[in-house]
Length: 117
Image (cartoon, rainbow, N blue to C red; front, side, top):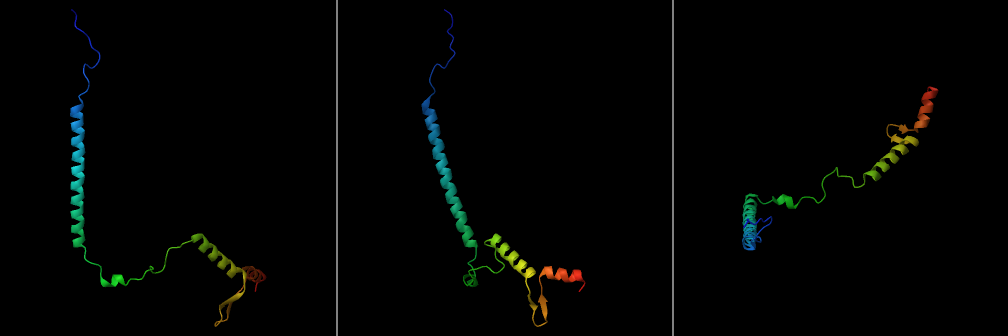
């Protein structure tokens, strides 16, 4: 009789070793995580013991940081700056009243320069 030819597995995959391996990996992962949590907790406690307490003056620090501070709305600030600059270029006013220095509109100043005054 001729030898039989099989082109497939003759038996199913054994489930028991796979389940045991998965359970072992899960237990190992849990143990590793617990060890890491304990180790990191110990390192944190050691670091907190090394850090000195804050000085008493730290409690009396002001709430707001010193100037200059960050702009909360740069677009609005820029618009206000440009409006103030434009007003300074287009209006009459005192620059230094005590010294008698005045400000005139830029158009008028250019006209006076063009006339040669």
